[in-house]
Amino acid sequence: MFPSQRGKPLRVDDQFYGRFWRPAILGQDEEPSRRGRRAQPALPAVEGLADMLPHGLRHGHKVWLDEQGHPRVAVEERMGHKLQGVEGTYSHTSPEMELGIARGLQEAWEKPLTDAAHEVSGWRTKRSS
Image (cartoon, rainbow, N blue to C red; front, side, top):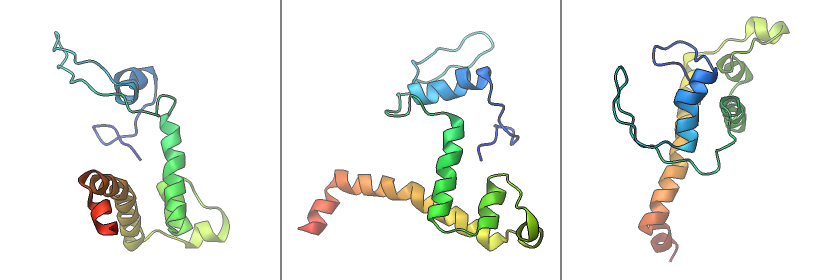
């Protein structure tokens, strides 16, 4: 679901947590460039995610896919699972299934952002009056 910068699976080890995960969740101060290392911008902490682990993202991802009603074969393939029995033998994910998943996830991502923007701009208040 989240490949490395080189497109390969992420190695979730202490280095990953220290260099990527914790700063993204807990925030970090700006760090100037040092010998052999680029400068790092300041990152704000993300409220409510201090205890979140990468594996928790997989659970949330699966819930979204199930809520959106995508075909089981497409969901299981996306999660890296193999279906057993007749369903696993004869079911395959089509390009249209993948596009449906992409559209559904994009909508799930954008809706809260759009709703928040409308609330800030007063759009909801104006429309509902």
